[in-house]
Structures are given as structure tokens and as C-alpha cells.
Length: 185
Image (tube, rainbow, N blue to C red):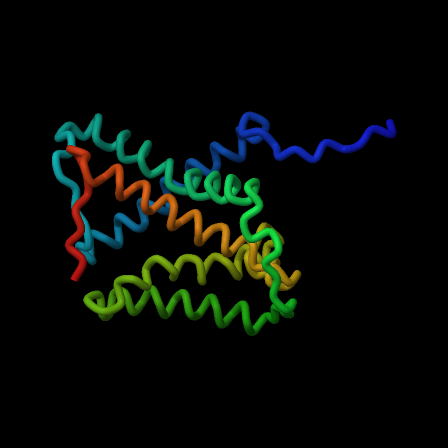
């Protein structure tokens, strides 16, 4: 068959299994942030349904939207051509660089607990520094692998998607009855 290959992005229904795994990881990762917040006390929820049998599935449903929301927004931005030509000098990713980034993630996480009033923002980047070398090492999609190829597109798309999603989530939260309220130092 000499037909031209189809270069359209895979539809969400074509990746149902991957999407379900992403939903589960989203719940796990956001639950970790919520667990850290039990210590930090940077936000709390108001007007939450008191029945645990309803509340916990609601939490899980809400947490399951975080990673898909970010990644789908990044894919939309990519489809619109954003950062299509972003290039950097290709960089060799050494084992020592991977280990240094992993250590930076661990130190960042430790600082959050040691000096929470000053270091609480580090929680948001710590997991990236911990997981990115792991992704690279396992050969999965990786910002480091992109950097090795001379592109920063994935990083810029994810950062922009984070800003877009963050603004939307805060906008929707502002007038909501059941919502989170920040108590950041």
C-alpha cells in the first residue's frame, strides 16, 4: 500500500487506555499535593458536602481533571502552532545532570517541609525535577530529551498550558459556592 500515512493527531477515543491511566495518575499526584497541603495549610475548602460517600468521589473526579486539562491544553496550543520554532542549542544529557536534577527535586521537597513559610512554592517544581530524570532514563516522553534534540517546545507548551488552566480554574473558583480559599503566607 503506497498510501500517504495519516498525520492527524490521535483522537482521544483512540487513546482511551492511556487516558484512563492519565486520569488515575492525576488523582494520585494531586492527592500528594493535597497531603502536603495538610502540613503547609496554604489552602482550604469551603461549603464542601459533608457526606464522605459523596465528597471523596467528588474529590477524585476533580483531581482526575488536572493532568488531562494541562496536557489537552498543551496539545491545543501545539495544534495552533505555538512555539513551533522554539530552538535551543542541543545539549547532551549526562548521568550527572540527571542525578543533579533529581537531587534538586529532593532538596526542594525537603526545603518545603523544613522552611514552609519561605519555601512553599518549591512544592510545585519539586516533582518535575524528581520525575523528569526518571522519564528520561526510562525512555518516555521527556523535556530533557527535547532539550537534547534542541527544542524547548514541550516545556514552553506545558508552562503556557499551566498558566491558561490556572487562570481558568481560578476564574471558575472565584464565584463558586464550593471552592478553595488560599491562606498562603
